[in-house]
Length: 120
Image (tube, rainbow, N blue to C red; front, side):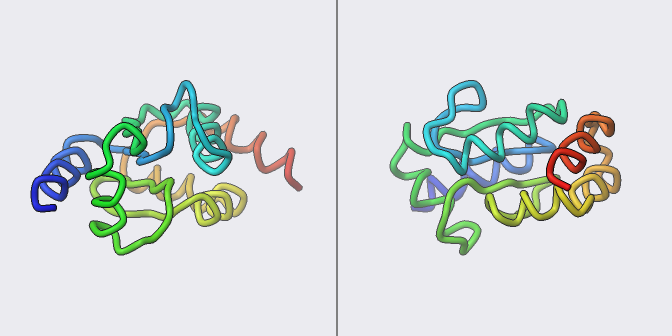
């Protein structure tokens, strides 16, 4: 498991935004992964996607790494942010915008506002 943890740590540190998900950002393979990737894609966030279905060590390793039992998992600037429910709540409350602003992550503010308007 050390190998998986090392690979995860390197990926999380090397990318400003990383989404561990089932499938890819262009072809999610579960509804929860699709929702988070869809939000990030719609907001124009440049993020690395890691398909946990392609590597069983990473699939289990990411759960151990974060001590979080579910996938998807979003990391910003090396820090675990949360899964689908948390990201959805943060998007709707504006907290995700604040997190991106605080960490210098580029995103489309107008798109973020559109998500909130559509869900008001």
